[in-house]
Image 1 (cartoon, rainbow, N blue to C red):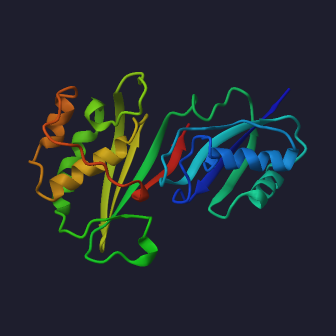
Image 2: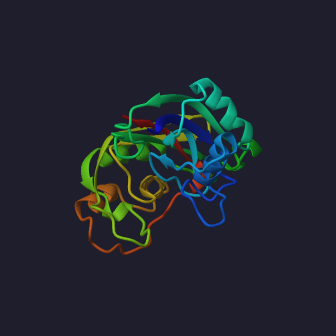
Length: 249
């Protein structure tokens, strides 16, 4: 019987083509599977809690894999996998679980954090870690508009087209928290699930309000009319400012 290994992975998404396996092999999933193969000399399929796009980071992505034998302790697995992974990907924690656990299907929700650097100059160490918005942002407008997202809504107008059908566009947002420290604005979103580019579209809408390019209440109007065509294009915040904080079970 296979032995299921649950682990948490942190990564800098900048150099990679996202989480999901692709033909070019430059994804987090591909590199993790290569690392397992290097340790046990056979193919192992890695299942993640969800996909992160190219450029998106993770502080704690959850995944699982079925290994043939318990030849290594969880602590040894951490060392062995990290030894063959690039330094931009790291397994943080690891343990054996029953086959009832599934990284994707037993997840109850996720928490994402988005970072905006609102100043004329972006510090070099923030490059690839925050969306640089040099124009003035009305932070009060952001804090006023964020409660509109909380609750159960149809987020069809806050989703991008992935090229294939989705199983419904209704999601529940548990909380949206905003904070400004100096020039850095953070927006943290907790929900039971997220559509393709949903958080980045939510942030884009908030920034449009904070720039004065969208009227107060525009977000509530979009949520109230989820299938009405937009008069203007939707702003998608860049991937570099987005972090998967953790997956809830």
